[in-house]
Image 1 (cartoon, rainbow, N blue to C red):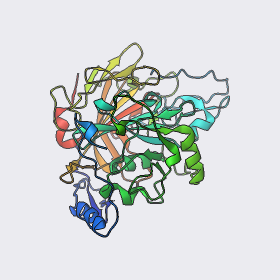
Image 2: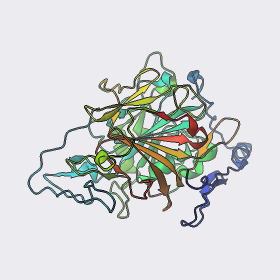
Image 3: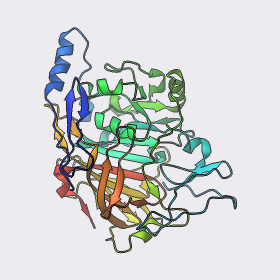
Image 4: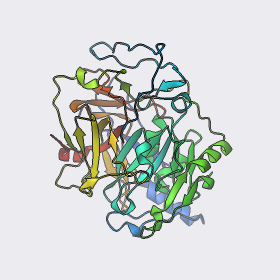
Length: 424
């Protein structure tokens, strides 16, 4: 990993990042103050009702609270493919123009309705443990971000731009601050049901974090009209709460949220142009068809409980997701989750308290591995320009990595458990 580890400290139940000058090679080591839990206890002592802290979840969770769409037909007025940056021979998408009412998505590079790709996405917190399966609507996410949480399992955050055809998404679970920071980089409206109060309350209630949150302790401006329960016989109650799209849109209107991207918006990826393939730029790179973010033998880095993996299919050029020994599917239509790109983003992490709440440095830089078109591209990720910009991914020569058009799955790899990662 280039440099050292990301640094942040917690002041007054918020996470503050102490960054050094960008040109310095020495990275920031993430340091967590122990004051968070004591502050939370102090609040409770002042007569304020404290939301019960979620217990770590593993197997006994009940005790705690597709295929890519084809390109549209376009007229001869479609923009021509543009050559990539220096050192990259594959043409990439550099500008986006409207053609027959469609534009190429910032999140997938694919042609979609103009209103969809020019609209800010929503980022929805979704559980990923076995007692919650299957999830509903998740295959429609353009980006899926996966990161460890307490109990040493992972949680997902789906970033949806094309949600008009969905009635609901879920089940929906609670927030952790590192997910909030990642969502801010996509300029997404953040949707959640619950939160780790000591580490999220101050952050999620800032004006800069536009969120649609269920009415629970710690949320100052709830949007309960966006959430409801769905009957799921045999499931624990915490896995019956869903985000309903109609209610979400009403809540966003009531809260006065602007659906337009900011003028300073930074797209997260550089995509290969139409009729081009990213892997053609990486002819000498190693190949891999099996990808294991937590290895195959189990570990406590978050991916060891259910042993997820991706299998590359050379025919459809997609990575198929598996977990717990079987295909991971969407309850909406029974389809297996598939993506065009998989990213391992290594982040320094620490255990915050006796409840096993975790912290991860998602600012700064670190090691990254991008899997696309069957190729393995090793490099780095960097995020230095504040909360409103995403992490960007670079190869060993410092060039931005080219992604294939389609969906992307980003696995936050706990750096201290990075030795367990496998691919072949």
